[in-house]
Image (tube, rainbow, N blue to C red):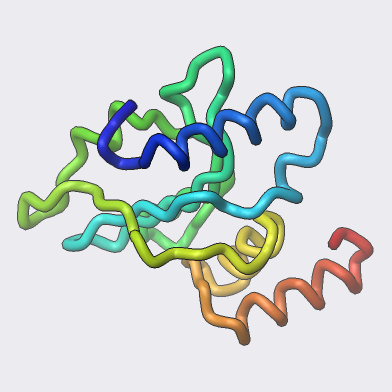
Amino acid sequence: MTKLITKEQAAQLLKNGVESQNSDGSLDRAPVVKLFTPDAQCTWLLSELDPCEPTQAFGLCDLGQGYPELGYVSLSELSSVHGPMGLHVERDNWFVATQPMCVYAEAARRAERIVEDDRHLVEAAAALAARGRA
């Protein structure tokens, strides 16, 4: 496993990936880890690893261009990414998810970037609930 995630996070991500294969609720899981570029505007909130290809993680990906999206990303590729000042992708050691992935995705869609503040997340959760999706 890469240095981007801890063994404990990898175990939880893999567990989520196995559970996701057995259900259709991958967006109901909370993100496990947040990765970011300290010298660029890229952020990844990851919720699971593909059990068949554990270097592939599923999550919310924001490359800083105003279009965050859900999808898969290669951890090995992220390990080699560096920003304009040469800094590599880092793990946010203080990140603690407070909502399921669907709420983070809705909040990101509305803000055009990944957001973590309570106001944006509460508004996103309410919008999803109004549509019957949360």
